Amino acid sequence: MEQEDLKYKRLRERMVKEHIESRGIEDPRVLAAFLKVKRHLFVSEALMDQAYSDFPLPIGEQQTISQPFIVAEMTQALALTENDRVLEIGTGSGYQAAILAEIAYKVFTVERIHKLLIRARKIFSELGYHNIVTKLADGTLGWKEHSPFDAIMVTAGSPDVPYLLVNQLAMGGRMVIPVGDQHTQELIKIYRDEKGIHQTTLGGCRFVKLVGEYGWQD
Image (cartoon, rainbow, N blue to C red; front, top):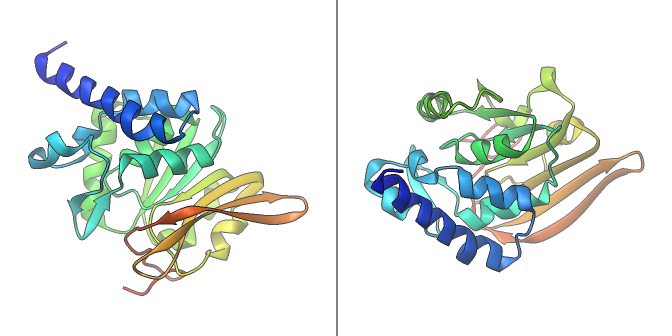
């Protein structure tokens, strides 16, 4: 292993131990994904050495790559299996989609900003993530033709829960979404079964706003 790769491998291991595992993330599949996915490749060269610190980083277009703990918390909340089909709203850097792709069978990810999607697609191709399908569109509309999904993750803050996304959940499906105003949100987990929709709150968070027909207006 080259010196540079070894350096980032050690930073990944420290990130998982200090920022993720120590804060209650215990799903072995989630931890394994975080140890494997090279987070530094999803940020600009100038920010690579900060990639494994526990805070968000800018990725351009007024968007960010979320802090590792939040990515881990949201991923664990989905309780994914290797057979799950997952919808992600907000591809961004592509890092969250790569984490999901390490655990689930297939990831469908929607991004509204063309420049970000082009960059993410390039990284997916270079890293060999053939189980990620991308689309340039308004994420608040979901991806109806591939629904229902076993899990849906929304990586931007919404004023409320878009009902179109809930409708695209399979029975037994889970969704995690930040809901609140444009500055602070609560992380909401939704579970759908034959009895209806069940909602629990996971805690406070702060995301860029979810822009779209059923989110915030641009």
